[in-house]
Length: 218
Length: 218
Image (cartoon, rainbow over all chains, first blue to last red):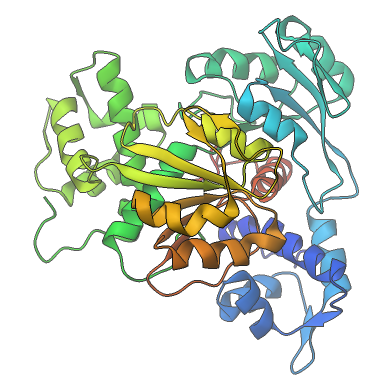
């Protein structure tokens, strides 16, 4: 679907999952087509940006008609490879880990947490949805067996590196890390950090110091 | 501390809370000074970026000596106004809300969740740390009384707008929203979105399609 010789810019690539998410919401609400102006309002991204992003994937809309929602979903679904189930391991089943394990990754049936691990004997054996939490000693074997390539880490910072090394050794190439400490990974492994403290502090800092730009991410 | 006539660029402003967070970690570990090269390695931001960012706040380091950790903390602490307690309301005390309520906003003693609300009678009256969850009907009065200006929303998407309107009416000007649906707010209100589904999907998409740029945010 990608135009030949035109690699997708990083910034565009980063917005695709969001576009996809909103389009699925529109589809669920019974919306069949949408103008870039209205889509822009909905997702609070300038319509010029949306049109430029979409142009990387060919002629997706027609002037005056707007975009066909189900066609766009098909295109982005193909780009995001949503036909293939993404099998995810959850490592660290404290409060946040439990919340994530029970979290409904809405509109994304292909994102599935298929195993969960902790060191705490109080937690091991507990059921999170239909997953039984296993001891960390089972991690490598289970991840290999389940064909898991993505891991969500919600372990304390001081254990991040050790746990990251373990999941990587078991075959994980994508890590969503809720601990702020940067981890060292081989070149083939991607890491995304979500640090709630920093997010909150950034928000408050912008609230106290900047009067413009309401939405501070994207 | 900001140099006159040189407003801090948005990208720099966005990194300050992260710099502050890492510096506090260094201080806790007993590190007194750090070279930009080592700091760069630790936080995985190019040292040229760090030096350029820091230059907005005057002469923070000396060539060959590096940066004095406690001095930097003082500077950034002043910029982030950490002397003043940030009073935060938590709205929506489901699994994720509970996890956030119990979350230890480490190194940031000034970030305090001081009240929590839900509509579910099973949850109202429950204690999260030392906060008793109140019914949504108490929200406006409590937020005003507590002088809260920041709210964390973990309510389902379909209620985001109503709840946002309520907290804004009560005086909130900064919202951290865990629901993906964009909300409409007055010009003086800042919104930061954390959408876990999109974060996870972006990570996996980059893992499957890009071989370079290990760290996909920042």
